[in-house]
Length: 97
Image (cartoon, rainbow, N blue to C red):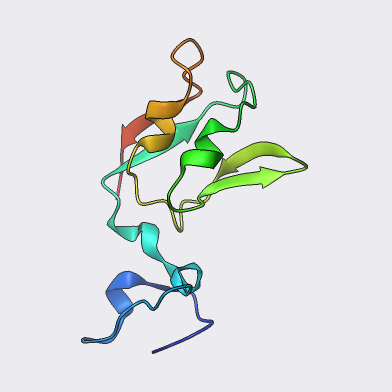
């Protein structure tokens, strides 16, 4: 297993695997087909997206949402779904690759 090296999941040697606690070492967002887009001007900093993100891909700086870590976001859409309906600071868009 290659450790402490940021590589895409497609670059893993055949038969290798991601071990528990090592996902941060790999760009696991490469398999995303949609991506969340965060609108800073609409965001009310409720932090629900950060709480519910299963990939810890919501970037927090100085206690506030500051963006999305696309290297690790897998595009599940949970952040967009949980963003308050009256706010919708996060929307999903097709990934352009």
